[in-house]
Amino acid sequence: MLKSNLIVKDKSFYKTFFSLTAVLALQNLIIFSVNMADSVMLGRYSENALSGVALVNQIQFLLQMLVVGIADGALVFGSRAWGGKDMDTVKKITSISVKSAILISIILGVIVFIFPNQVLSILSDEMHVVSNGAQYISIICFTYPMFAVTTTLLIALRSVEKAKIGFYISIFTLISNVTLNYILIFGKAGFAPMGVRGAAFATLVSRAVEMLLVILYTFFYDETIKLKISDILKTDIYLMKAFLKKGLPVFLSNGIWGIAMAAQTAILGHMGQSAITANSIATTLFQILSVIAYGSANASAVIISKTIGENKIASLKQYSVTLQIIYLIIGLITGTMLFLVRKTVVSWYIISAEAEYLALGFIIILSVTVIGTSYEMAGLTGIVRGGGDTAFVLKNDFIFMWLFVIPAAVLAAFYFKASPLIVFMLLKSDQILKCIVAAVKINRYTWIKKL
Image 1 (cartoon, rainbow, N blue to C red):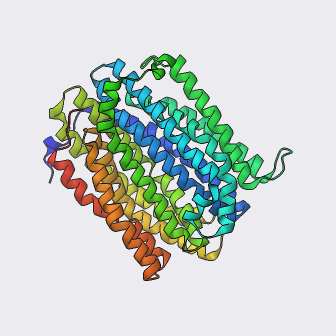
Image 2 (cartoon, rainbow, N blue to C red; image 1 turned 90 degrees about the vertical axis):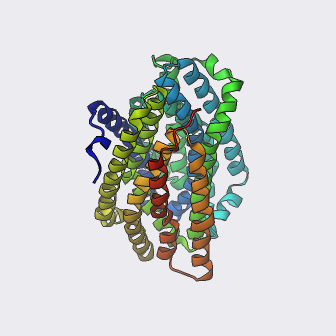
Image 3 (cartoon, rainbow, N blue to C red; image 1 turned 135 degrees about the vertical axis):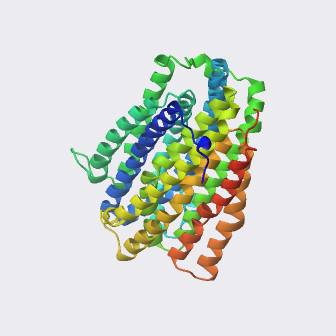
């Protein structure tokens, strides 16, 4: 039994945690609902279109991981500076993260624009699927720098506990994207049906307006950071060196994770179109229902980092114990929801019987592993990374993903010729195994580091 003095009794802690978690979860829910709308509409238009866009979404996920890796590294600095009321450092770290993210997004965008078929062929040998994906990525790549600017600025605002603006802007993005998708994919309001290209143009327009709104708010309305264009143009070399030391592991960790997810898609992508389709459906549903878990991780990082910045070290043990209990409860609720809605969601798609069977199986597997995800992901990226030990998550992810999960799945898929269900189970097994490491690391409190 846990001692009662290890559980936080301060109501302000719960108010801060749950308000931040709720706002971030709702924001992510809206973002992933856009993906779900894309997925369902394309699934009703053509399974080939759905599968093609599913491949491209892995490139988008890699970009997201790289950009968020940069922004989350900055968030650790920003939240700690916010705790110490050092707004000058918040401005400087925001400048570094915005410019770094734009550079990464342009590099990736140029690569996929010049070599769309070659890049997507790595993920699947189904050429009709690759062809659909190439049409989509040749347009969607222009949204990459927009995504970089929007994400880094919103996470900078999050570091000073101003997360609501991201939620409101995401609502607009959802409405505009779904409306444009419907018009352009199926050819409504006088437009000819455009299929995957219609979905791409819809996202392009929505991302452009979304970026404009975030820029207008950040530079002209926000009264907390009070960021100016001139602040973005400056670079503090001393802070840049500190950021590279502590932020680079976050970037590399997210990069490794993004590449690993692409590798997982590639493994399933070479097991047939049904596996690609099923993975897309299961993953999209998982993203929507796991938003609270990811929101809790981001909220934890802000709270832990700010607490250290305020020099309230004595409170960290209570905070970490309480947060771990909350993570497990979130995981159990999320897993139950995934299991209960699986048949209803899969019925929305017009797909083959094999793809439907695999999608249902994949979702059942995720309904179990999400319990582990909710605990270890939030604990490691929220508590440990928020505490300043940014290198540990990088080492842990590399060992589990590249020395166990990927090799085991490759052997199962291509040597032992196992079913996609077995392969998928292996690909998600680390979410349970990493719980052991997370529990030991968190409760040793060696993650409290100076920046």
